[in-house]
Image (cartoon, rainbow, N blue to C red; front, side, top):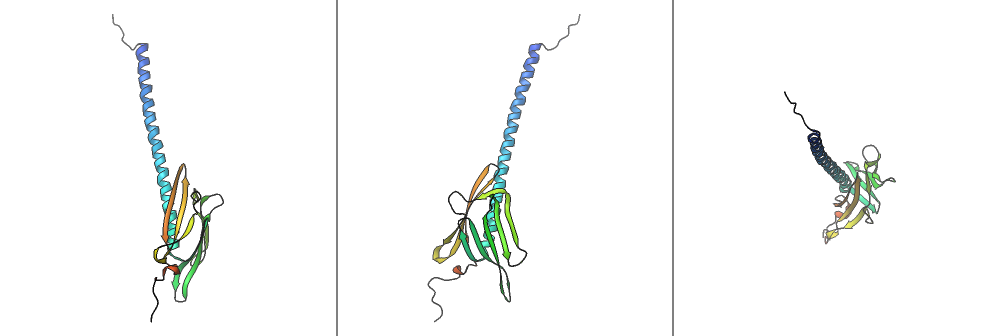
Length: 183
């Protein structure tokens, strides 16, 4: 007589329990990796947005002919082009948007069409605590620049940015201290 051999109920239960345990551990490892990946993506996206935002502000400040920095806004007269008749001047303003989504940039005059839009509207851009967003700074030897403080939030990631920008075209930076002129 042949006896059939199979798994007992206890062996089957132990096998199912071990499989469930291994699947649970695998799921936890996978979800932890996905969470880390998502957080890393938020950090990199926020870092990229803040860096591009500062680069845009810096490009306008480096073309500045005149700057008026207020705690939550910045007005810049920029040299858009130089022609035989003289420089072509435009005005660029930066300010917080009412919803704090993105940073408002408005360009009027100068070369090209007027613009009025929010830079990076998918991010919350605001001043960093009680520190003004834009501060005029007198540098060594009477040189002039603007200190930019921003706080950018994207997703659950908040990052603070600070950059000192030298205003190369500003007339205050053309003078040489101690120079008396020709005699």
